Image 1: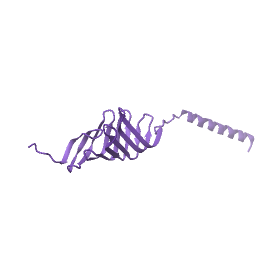
Image 2 (image 1 turned 30 degrees about the vertical axis):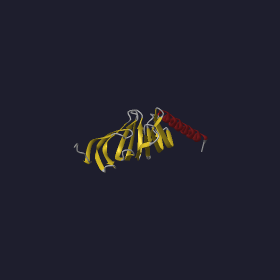
Image 3 (image 1 turned 90 degrees about the horizontal axis):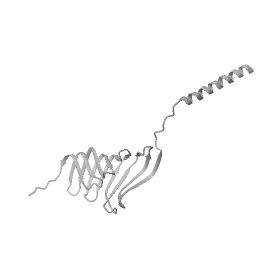
Image 4 (image 1 turned 45 degrees about the horizontal axis):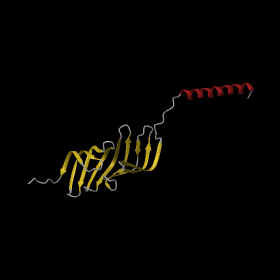
Length: 182
């Protein structure tokens, strides 16, 4: 190959490299939307006035730039009594998330709640918890089994205190006992 052909090839190659670099500069960088933090074996404690109120455990948590959190694995939550010394209610769900802009936790998939004081068991597919208002709610189908009376109450929608000491089904159905006033 002659020096003229080699020079021409060099010029073509350098021109091609220069154009490729220019194309890269003109392309807009795609912003990263994934998690900025991944934490394993998470244990979160909420307390009021020095008393433990809520304990959440999950095997994995992803935190995003906007402070939203995703809990892709099983979530276990314990709600404590007023003194913070004993668990009153337990909650278990398949997964969940935390929406920072709304200060709202959402648990989903095979949600089970057990209140040891009232001996009630609750089942639903989705449940919301707002730690600021201390309220739990859902618009989904709910089943509550009252082990002391044997009653099973079903319905659509639920409003409850965070420790499930008070619950109200929005549209109840089912069979349950009612005592006559006389």
